[in-house]
Length: 248
Ligand code: ADE
Image 1 (spheres, rainbow, N blue to C red):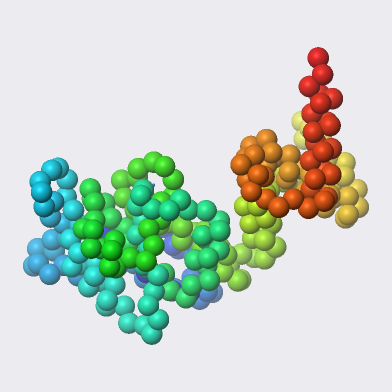
Image 2: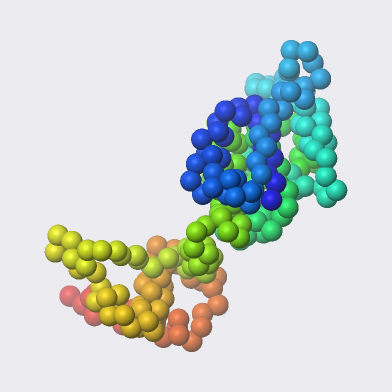
């Protein structure tokens, strides 16, 4: 997979793209990152990339020419997916991460200004993505979030492939609790079932705890899920447990 990032602040990406899973994915040639300062594609000799808005008003607007020229300079047979990071975009989630992870080439456009010339939205980008209902100073941090979640889904990027499959959200449920040694820490014991070595019971416990966590923290996720017979049974058990503890 090739990932291009168009930004006025390329230095922001150095640490993130060379550390941890992303750094390893790059070393293993699973992903190829290209960070470009689109000021280099400005048509003016001062490197201007923004201008005042037509119609007046405050703030500066990113001009179309540098971004169009930067994207068009990328040679390739297939047109890449060009993603504009902005608060007005579609809300980002794991499903979209999985969809983007299948692409061969992604281009992220990160702006820092009041707005983008509308022709960038209409004729250059293929997707607009928001990482949440809050406003960042620019698209860079948002692009890093999306890139991290997409690269970790590439085959071979994570040491243990099952860890991506069992992630929160991939299954539609939040992940179950994890424990490691010691079996007892400051009087807090690891649940017996996890020490039992009984694989089937452990699988069932994990599913039940995933359901418990999801129903407590994200009931909206549970509503969207098609429940299996086993899930329904476990949810009924959780409901019955609640009734017992709720008694005065
Ligand atoms: N740029 C500024 N705020 C953003 C957000 N919430 N998501 C994506 N890009 C942004």
